[in-house]
Image 1 (cartoon, rainbow, N blue to C red):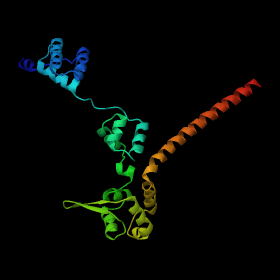
Image 2 (cartoon, rainbow, N blue to C red; image 1 turned 60 degrees about the vertical axis):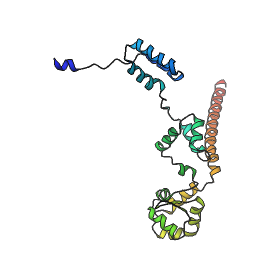
Image 3 (cartoon, one colour; image 1 turned 90 degrees about the vertical axis):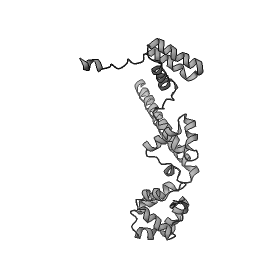
Image 4 (cartoon, helix red, strand yellow; image 1 turned 60 degrees about the horizontal axis):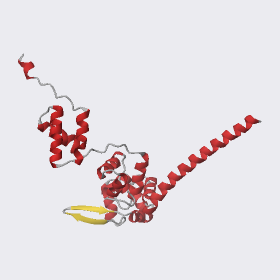
Length: 235
């Protein structure tokens, strides 16, 4: 019997009328917000503190954007990152910068990989499938030009596409002798990343335009076939 006396049932959920009331909280303040809490108390019979908690959680907190990303939006971000900041892109898409960054992470899209206007020691090593020490040795031997900055005791390296292209042109045999895995991988990455920034968006738009043209052409052919079949029936 004592156990039954100690058990407490969970309070009933807030009903649709309460949810309708709390929806007005975002446009209220001061006395009007307090009046809303009083109305919730009368409607639900719950304590004032619990009503305030309900208003804060369901009426005042900014809701998290859970909208699904469409293929068009993802492609737009890829194109826009060439020339716009994440904050500017988020504003145009009516999303938060955090939502844009999360989408990039989920889809394995790195800003530096898309923009290709500079590389770190680590990102270049990862792309070329070599150790970071190997890339550092290219810099130390003067094969690869890099801007070095000191942050405390830590060195950071910034490598431009122009420096990467110069190393490929002048020192590729030496790099391969030292054990670089693949010349074709190096060439493919260079071709991808050395595209001028202002043309990347145009190239992606060309791909989209080509897809639309092919779809329209296929649709036109289908219409022509239907016409031919109709003519055959009349004969």
